Structures are given as structure tokens and as C-alpha cells.
Image (cartoon, rainbow, N blue to C red; front, side, top):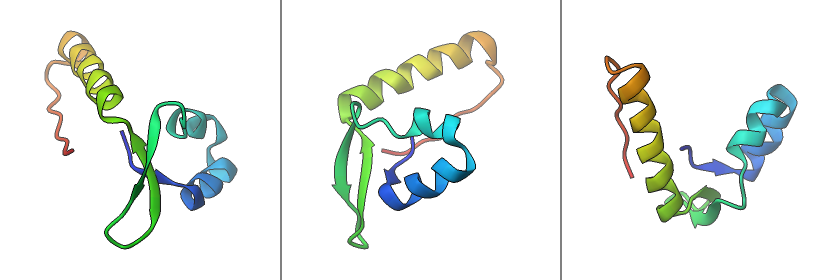
Length: 72
């Protein structure tokens, strides 16, 4: 559920290319300009809510002892 950017994407491709396939999803993400002026991508609001609900449901079933903190 991370906000991501092109520079970090390029670094991550060298370190963790398989993980980057999960993080860099332009089909689910939209562009966002940060307060510092950088251009980032984040999950579109509707997708993020659905993905978060799915994650919370999985945690409730498989690891109900985990607490999840998040911010939008």
C-alpha cells in the first residue's frame, strides 16, 4: 500500500525485482505530487480500499492477533 516513485522503482529493480513487480502497478495506481514537489504514484482510492479490506479479512482469519495501523 506504499506511495512509490520512479527513482525508487529503478533502485528496487536492482535489489528486489520480484517484489517490485508487486509494488509498481501503474494499472492500479495514479500520479500524486508530494508536498516536497516529487512525483509519486499511489493506489487509486477505490482500489486501495478494496485491497485494504481484503488484507484485513485475511489477517482476521489467519493472524487475528496482528494489529494493523494505516493512514490514508
